[in-house]
Image 1: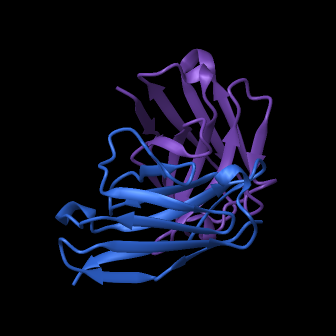
Image 2 (image 1 turned 120 degrees about the horizontal axis):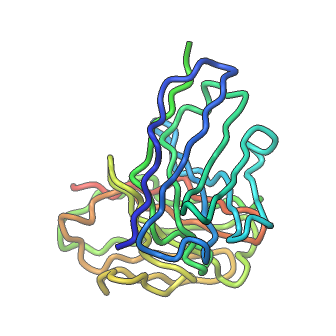
Image 3 (image 1 turned 45 degrees about the vertical axis):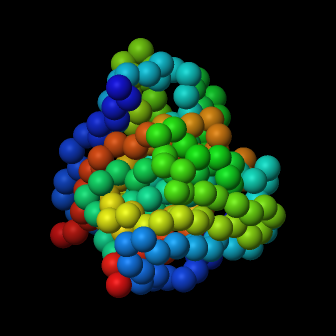
Length: 118
Length: 108
């Protein structure tokens, strides 16, 4: 069974940093692109980033480029999102999601809430 | 950026009704890389349709997708109680993914 489990988010002060992780199991993690997507309170889904299987190709949304860094450790079946210079607008539930190889995400984690507030 | 606009914002229907959701792109969607998701509060989004018209694994055949270019449609043949949720379209163009703002399908 495919499972994606995000690490616990939490409360972060404005300007702060947080690193999220996503533990994958039930599939060959090293064979898939992986994505991060978020949903701010009362808003829709927003794609943030995608990383290729070997990490050699990375894409970012304009809203997070230069502040967020995606990485992965295939030996540990883990995906990461380093978030810096956080603002209140980054408050959201963050999801990791497996790329289906058909330009869509077929498996998602349950999400983790990140709140940016003083 | 290819902006996706979904309509209507809210659809009020009864169980057994047919639901028709629209997704319009500001630019032609490359290779019909258009997907549809169902999202319920507190749950992970669920992939319904990829490639504009292909049902994802395990998705009932009452869900169907159609369209090409800039205009796409998700149809739910006969609404069941578990289908009341928010639906998003999503496109991929090789450098970014974008989502529509969502259509809420609510019980009338």
